[in-house]
Length: 173
Image (cartoon, rainbow, N blue to C red):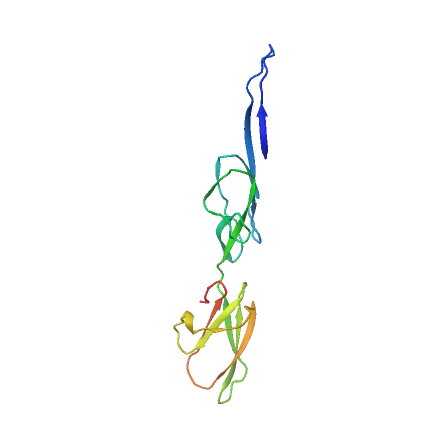
């Protein structure tokens, strides 16, 4: 990166006007993901196609001038005006998971353990006899743990359903 100058002198000692070209370095910071190349050298004023970084369980939301995502967002291509760093802004795309286990098999009621897991944090869960989950019917679990267990008592026959919601709004299958 930098500005380069060219001045030509002929054999008679005549000197031409000076010419310049400026190149800028754009650093691509993928955060917890990976990207190739990790930087691009481009002539100021030119554009380049932004590469698509990868990160397991996430999709790229945009490239941004701020690591928090509060700066200028770019998708597709980027026109270079000066040297700077662009940060990958990620969106969690992994679905949370849940499991149900039962510890006592012969009784008038059953105690079941619901295990809730997600890589970014569990926001809540639905537990009940309706197979239709609605976002306003889930119970919250506190400070968004990545793994938590909840005990429930079942005293009525029927099919029970567990749906887990993560902090990004993703819902288990």
